[in-house]
Length: 138
Image (cartoon, rainbow, N blue to C red):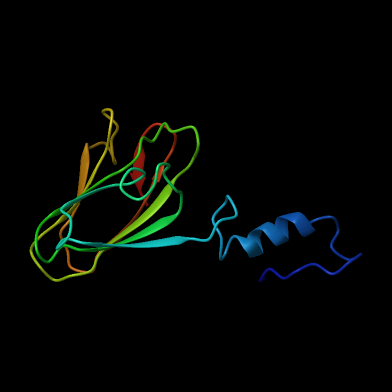
C-alpha cells in the first residue's frame, strides 16, 4: 500500500506520520535538502567531511568521487558528534581507474570493525551510517 497525503477529517489522526514519510523522500530528517558533493582527485587527494565543506558536518550527503588521478581519502566526522545522532553518507567511486577511495575514521572509531573502508571497484557505491559510536556500511 502506498502512502498518500491525508484528507481532512478522514486520516484517523495519522496525518503527521504520513506527512513526515512523504517529506522524507526529498529532505533529510532535519528538513534540509539532500546535498550532492563532487570530489575530484585532480584538485584534492583528501577530503574531511565537516571541515573541508563547512564548519559542521551535514547528515545525508552524497559524495561522487573521481579518483582517476590519485587515491582519495575521505575522513568521516566523529560518530559521537551530538549534533547528529545518526549521520548517513553515500559515497560512489565514479571512475574506472585502479585508484581507490578510502573512508577513514577519527578517534579510534571503526567502520564495520576496521579503521578504514576501501572502495576499489569502479562505480561502486556504499551507504554508511553512524550509531553514535561507530560507523556501519549498509
